Image 1: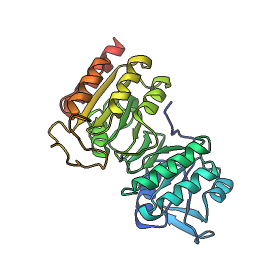
Image 2 (image 1 turned 45 degrees about the horizontal axis):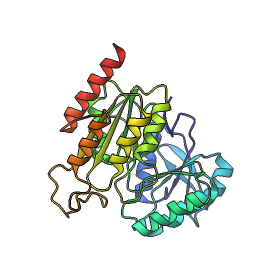
Image 3 (image 1 turned 180 degrees about the vertical axis):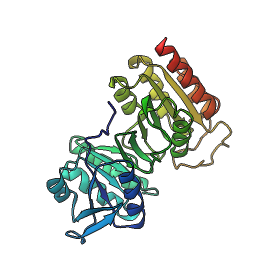
Length: 297
């Protein structure tokens, strides 16, 4: 099995006719993803050839869902228009919206997240500013390279795109049930806890790897959830041990203020919940490998 994304997922791409949309649609198709069309207002009725396939373009998510049966959208819309694109997807009732776009104003993200909550959370939002979701060998919604790993028994949830790629590559011999890049903005849709709950319920996932970073209290809240609800082995890594106070590091949400949001505090909270925390990404991969061996023996 997998979480959020399976071989049955039918994907549309909002912004498919743009340069980034075209490039990554081609990569998703090459990975075996069932991309069934795209959405660009004003271009409905056109057909775009990508990756050897002729893909229809629709004016709206609602029409695309009606014509194709799509259940997932990947958003490559520029920041200025991203809020409208996500709200449109929510109003159409699509089950999963993967928002790749970086640089969306926090106010806009808060607005479309509040809109999703107000409409009953029928749409799961992953992101924004994230690499997406991949269930290797089944489907790939976003920009995660599909050729760095294969299907397996590890579940990965991460704030960082590049660390997602590194851990997937270092553990490629074991493989992954799914990997979820949740993004590092101050406001995001799907959280560590959401993914942890899904991996706990997934029979294919035997070990969970969780990657966090400085800033906020998401990792501390995840640690409390793990202590109370997760029975599977969890291995963690927290980026930012050397980050100076008050300076944003990489992601907009990765900033330490005083004693709040430090990597050390997060590491201690996770270890108190029974999570093995690596000092480096490679050490984290080795801890995951050891945990996998222990689940077999």
